[in-house]
Length: 243
Image 1 (spheres, rainbow, N blue to C red):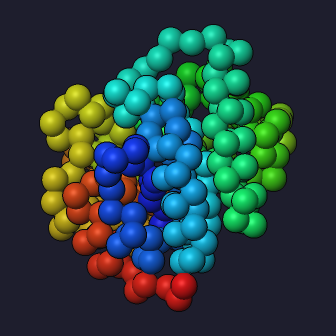
Image 2 (image 1 turned 135 degrees about the vertical axis):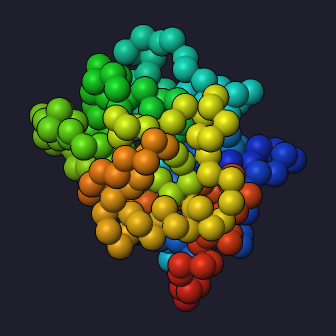
Image 3 (image 1 turned 90 degrees about the vertical axis):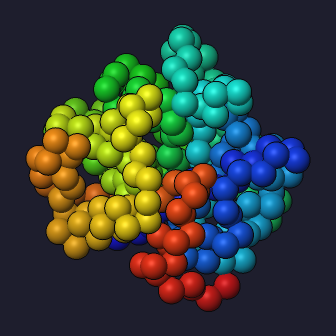
């Protein structure tokens, strides 16, 4: 199973994440596109880092919410969301073109990601934006137990999907991520994260906060780059690949 990590989430002189140390251990780098984090120089540097480490580059668009790091819901129209998605994907495509590499997938960030998995009107707008801007790129969506509706929308617009699980986030009994407002939503130590990651990759299951275990079929698993344990987790399960 491929390991993906959110990357390029610094902004100007404000540094966030452990990109340089984590990059050698992952397969896919989801690079922030300037709305929830990042700036053109940070994006360019992160693309170069991914290229040097043979890591697949993905666009990581979110709501226009620098102050909230894209983790707050933004009330917007369908046209606004469609345009925001196109703007961000296009920005990263342009920076990639400067370095002779390509955007190879799209993974929405934060509140946008969580909203689209529960609101199929939002999901369809995201899918349409991917179809318009990057039709060859798969869209990364949450690996949920009932996925027929998600698959149907993607098929309607000719968009491929990659299903994603999370190593460092708690799950509720409906198979969704626990809201970050709840203290236990983010796992607090490396051992807990590594244990969940191994459960997902080896057994295809995840255990919820209430102790219920359900099957989870995923193509990729996420390690959050802004998490303090990202390097410990990544290095514990992967050897660095050749640059």
